[in-house]
Length: 453
Ligand code: FAD
Image (cartoon, rainbow, N blue to C red; front, side, top):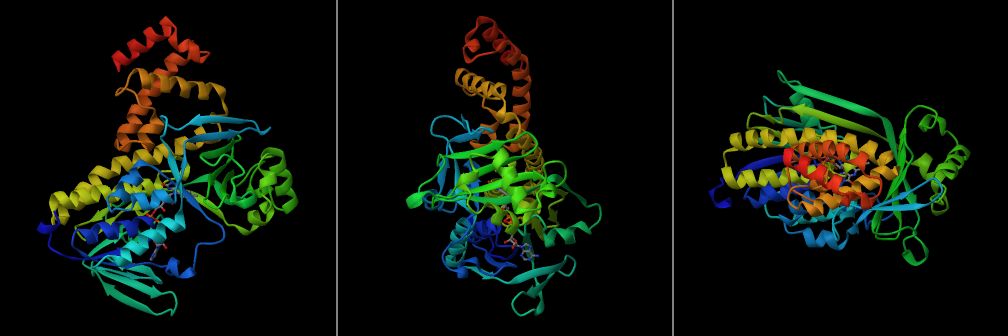
């Protein structure tokens, strides 16, 4: 508990989603925390305006936010999405619930969430925030940070005793660790990029598509998705190949973009009055997976969040995983007080296999979203799985639910999911309609499979 802690001076690099939440947790254990962040204070930019970018928040993220007492505050500005709505080429819609009745993932504003966390951090005694401070370089031996003030251009050297690298997928803290002996590191990019687009609000700030859903336009080799915002708009993201017959390379002019969207996303186009402008003004983002190990350097430095495990966004779990990192570290602080050596060691041993599993799941889910959700057989399988889940409570939870609506470690969720998928592969050839589930032959087979597993 906090009372057994020796108060220490801790340093965080990066005040993004994970850094700001971690600062709160560390301060509440009685430590004084200094946070350095490259960007300007986002709260000085005035009220949130213009394009909003949102994220899907689910159970793992909620638990970590509740741990610092802001679950309710964030929930009030989140929009529950109870399932997917698939849009086919002709504009016909299909629904697929995400979980049980009432279970939802929440669309929240990324900037709004970061601001709320920063407000809390600032109000927390013992935390100091320094904006416009870019980390150029970390010297692990000397235990110094080399910082550059983005507004004045001035550079300075800042000593640290214990450093948390919360500086995201392109972490400068990690770069220093990469140069240490026997450091494992890999990064790989998908052949796809993403482009954020916008669906405008309807009259009086109404939603022009079903508000409480995540919308998907699955098109086989590519897809578009949309998540609702509070102002009636939706943030769309097009996931699209860089090269090839339908790709960023082939969409070079506004006329090409307009024609392509009218052909493949016909029902969305009338809702996107600024389509071509957005397409050419907004950057094309790349999709990277970063794996590395170890995450700790002695008891001096720890990587956490995207700095240690950047994943592709298709399971909506990157931030949730980073927030879960904070919950795990918090428990270890409760358990081990000031024994940082053990805390760092335990943290990376527990989290690494789960981060690896989540990275694999995220890549797997891209295929599911862009391709399989358009297949009636796949949707039937999902319905059958939810029947199995109801019939065998405690023994069967669909993989999506284990990842999204549970706290089962990701690696276990993946293993359970693979086992269940093997069973479904045996069962599905005997199932052609939902009613087939009740056939004695199917039930017998299921009983056998459940018994073996
Ligand atoms: P970041 O949010 O990247 O924050 C890092 C911070 O460090 C930033 O503030 C940055 O300015 C600062 N920084 C970086 N370098 C330096 C430096 N050298 N010196 C000083 N400061 C520095 N996750 C979900 O859970 N659900 C979703 O729906 C979801 N959707 C996504 C959609 C897209 C298109 C993408 C790309 C990601 C998505 N994610 C989602 C993942 C999520 O964005 C990340 O996992 C999350 O932002 C990680 O938080 P972080 O604090 O570790 O890193």
